[in-house]
Image (cartoon, rainbow, N blue to C red; front, side):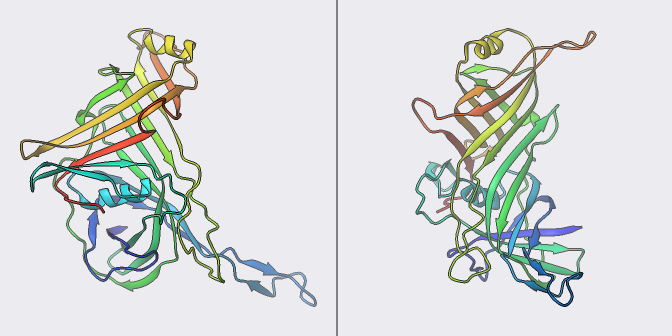
Length: 318
């Protein structure tokens, strides 16, 4: 059982700050350490391994959570997902800031990393260094909560004494009722949305080992892949026509949270252009006709490939 998950951004890759940890409302974690051993079978004991050659040490796995928009650590995970600090604007002095996250396109930049403390069963704490967000999957369906699953890679953990959870936010968890805008090509496709899955993958290089190190020495970005699936009740032929015409459309998803100053907490997601990969409205008996639309994001003719705008009470994610 995960008792708590605390985290903090690292000023230098693989170096854990001594204080300032923030809490996360984690559901589960599946971080696993691989040693990549090569086992040796040699004369005279050729039938059984007689030794091992030490290999690369790499942590991979997922962290799943329900998200509160006043949870500060969420923004630091976003920074690692996008590979750089957001552009921040004060919307209401000392109250509300808008952070616009866009993807990193400088291959020489230092990828933001996190130090994570994961406590297990009130017994011990796993401390991970140099953890980077390799992917994010957002799933939401049928009026339920939005699940955010962060795919992580990083350095091996150390064992530490059981500590204490750091408080997380108090806002409502993101759910279907807070998804106030779903637009495809500036045309609303809700109500009628049944489910949404969005996948963002950095394909970070898992071979950034050098100078004799068995552990990652930095983050190196790979190809950025964005895809997903929309499932909606079929009410008109607009999206089907777009599929047949091979039309690219902007996708916008806006979550609106509780009151913050004279406005609200919010998370606005915009993907500049998506291509509908396949679709065919089908029927089954007398059920609603549904349209399931797999899509892939491509570079738009203008604007950013992808934007996440987080509006909260945190002044900076620099």
